[in-house]
Length: 227
Image 1 (cartoon, one colour):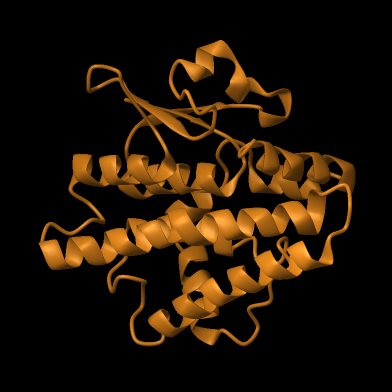
Image 2: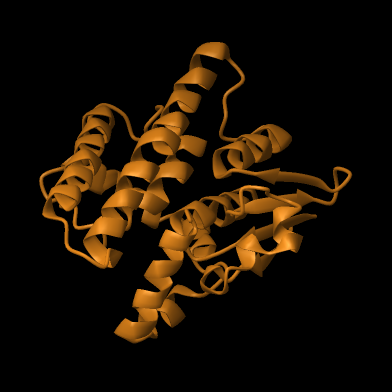
């Protein structure tokens, strides 16, 4: 059985969505970032970096893995799913996974910080990170013009990037002119496993019902994920 330690952030949703897609039996523990649980000793023993998500594979000698990209690769290899075996196709997927880990995530995360949560308004910082996030989206839009998914077939790269792109409005990034990215986003949303994964660890209906103050606190948790 897989134990998932997660929260309501893009990096957390990557893993709950993927676990649902794989149909693996797992349990989920909500790590409350606002309470800084990710910095407590019990969590730091699993991830010295103090960030979610983390998995514990109790069927594999209680193996602990942190970093969402590493978790996706581990689960894909464990199940022989969504990561091709052939070298050319395999690295086509991995390069797009790294595109998210080194580009979309960090840039959009900073866009969130300066657009939503910084105590002082810094227009230059907001513009910088929103502009770079949009540029990365445009790269994906061009890629998706000729294929249904980023690496051709559905892969861990799509599961890595989707939870970030779905929050583009929160980051202040417009995708109206990116028809291929929109089509891909809608296709990902249409997957039942994606919908189930988005309800872990808190149902989306419950999140949407929260008032603005509560949702702002949830957003600050996204910042603390990288604190």
